[in-house]
Length: 470
Image: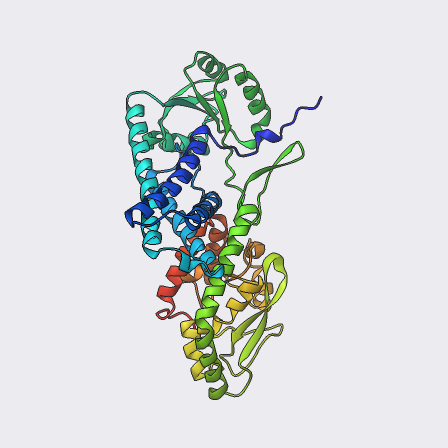
């Protein structure tokens, strides 16, 4: 009978993480019930539906925000920040659902506002209490675990530093173990940790209960030694983790999965699949629809302005690359006297004679991009993502910048992480384009719903004051 190895790589919830989810979901319902009491309102079917919708949305959004990544590995302030961002996202979605279902009039505004503030407050308070209790327990020797590191290596030294500097994780460093001779060990400068011995001593310490966790920080080429050590540690009760250093790879949303019984790790992957993909699309539909309603009249005024101030069409379409490198035609208000879309496209520069006077205002304020919100609703683009470049520029830079085409693992956006960090407008040097690509890939690696909302807020603040757009 074949032994399945698929379970080795599938993520699972610890008992504490599962309990945390249940408590949070219960506090959401409790907060709504308390809000109705405080505001002297009755609890009826509307509140029941709102509570159930909030629970479902919070469960999904918390996964996207990585809210339950484990209490030994996440600082409290980071966890509280993610909690509030998650709840703000959920509440925003609830308001949108009430709007499109035409039930917003059935909800008490006073109850809704009280609930919006009370729910995350209750969840924050219980986290603070849990943190205080676990901190006191660990200070007295309870709920702490000893961790040994196998391999005097760069990743091993980084692990040791994190363990010794983060006492709140409840881990105690039990020392390093390595079966190589001291002459072969080449520790980093500043490495001042004790090497207690080889694999034999580690196994003895684990059998004696002196080591609870073993982090194997050997390089991938040491697979035979790693396999032998894991086999020997199987005769102990120690938990074993592999801490491979993948620094030599440019990982893009790396994650473990399996093909049948074979564990595999993605090196380059689209971050928006499953729950994340659903929430990203829902975010685009919500923001795209709301913004399109708000900008309908301004777009009409801008269209008249374009038509009356210069001859030519109101809109300009240009070929760009979309998700997976598929060609799309991006829609913009025309800001120039020309509509270039050939094999050679000259970027707009400061003082460019092709730009109309009205077009200069539109480009400076990014108002020429407003028609793209219609493409967000149709699914060609996203509100937030790497800005699409003209096809001619793509073909130019893909051979000059390593990883350039990885930007197209996601939908192009109207605004992006590079733009709000100053890398917007003309890229007259290769270094500027490299920085833009660097920020785009950083966004893909670290995407969360909260990061998208942060970028939207930063865009609104910058849209009328940026000087790099010509």
